[in-house]
Image 1: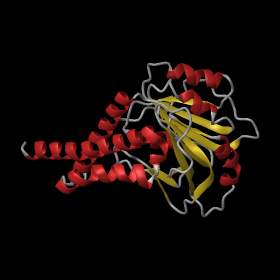
Image 2: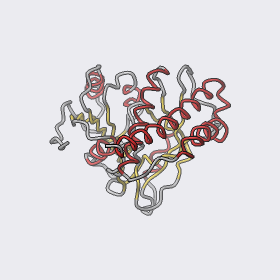
Image 3: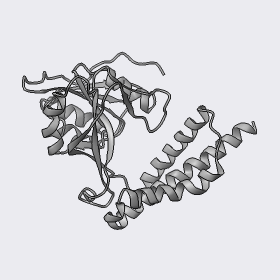
Image 4: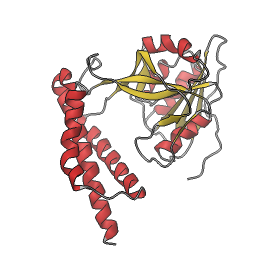
Length: 278
């Protein structure tokens, strides 16, 4: 799908002189339930780029309200290109020296926000920072135990020194040229707010995309992976990442991960044989 010409569809307020020399880049589609908290946590950034691919649920109204309140938001309409290409498109619109790529259902906690000036002042050899991401599981009001293992994800990067791989159609991630240490202060919070049945639909959709990605890479299905990957996936999340500390919510989180793994292997096998058999 061709790129549209980037067009701002909300008023842009200039950032104040004390703003961080950083852009935030967000892609969204029907994120009314969570994007407000995300935008609120980005107050202080010199620029906030929101790339929408056709929201109909009130997302645009919320974004426009934050823009009119003074946040330096550029709201851009761009038809869906796929996860990696859409996020790269958002990244390419940034004008500041640093860019924070953030999902609409994520937000920066106060400690991470406070650490940003120090991170942005890093030596030139550092191309970006991996941040620690922590979940709030469905049905819980607080984040998971601080003794669980947070993910370390590259999100804060110098403009022009990191990219998304367009060949990846799911589980896309930034890759950078140069050092990318872990920012130890603060958390990027991820709100897993979907009801379980909706979450499973999302997991199965991701599983199909990953299976299709494997086929594009010429990979064949594996009977061993079909048998062993799902239980290994569960054990890794529940014990290695210590989600057993989160009670039944942690067990369900690990189990849905195992279902995702099973569906990935099963759909890969299904699509492979369907293609082979014509």
